[in-house]
Length: 329
Image 1: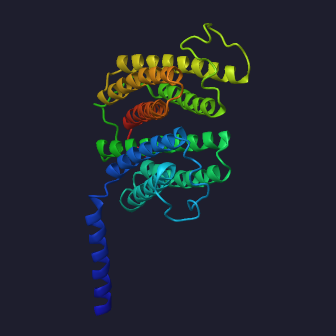
Image 2: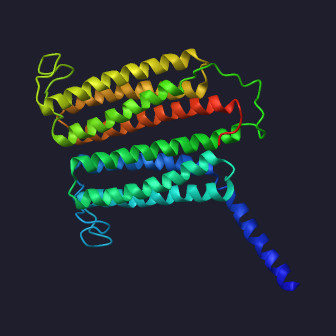
């Protein structure tokens, strides 16, 4: 009898300890921290690429055959990126653990955080392959693509966590929550996907040596059309796709303003418009300043932020639509 009581007391102790952890490990805050940390990691990865520091550590997972190499110059940049990647991985793992321990009823968050763990693991392995294969263009583009997808999944997870708290506990639709039809998610998804393609094309243009094929902007050697040739056409396609994305962003902003003017979506689209304009100007500066390192870093930072804002718009619009009929997940 004493043993049973002791065991029950032990279970209550573990449960109480886990309960005390639940508040500081609220999945909403962990998901937001994961988003911010992953975004910072993408920018740091862009810094590694812009400074040509990718092969400062020519081996993986060690660096120059050491666990902690001499931290100077390019090695410091590349090694900082690896340490940041490990930290982001732990944050994402912590988010998934918190979701499975305390938020299992929110299937949206559980699924998102679990997928994020898989993606960050794959990303680490692809990063190792990228180094060991000495930075081939296609693998570098794949590395960036996985990072952007991971950022999108984390944004979706954060939105799911916050929306779950906003919704009523029952599955009964709330008659006071009436949304206008077609409230942005469809066009937002198309715009986000187009932006994703634009970023990857831009990465390939930069890595293939096509970034300075044309020395002027917005024209192409004083003309409106490409002069022809593989690199010239790549550069031309990137600029044309940027125009298409701009039109999509503008159309999405107009649609968002007309259909309900909900604060979260208005704020996201306001950010997206500002980010797009800044991105175009910085893209032009890449040509004007002949791919200056700081300009290249800012270019990727703005592009990634634009991608995150558009993903947020798509997911939030989707959450508002299905939130009328019950809980997310």
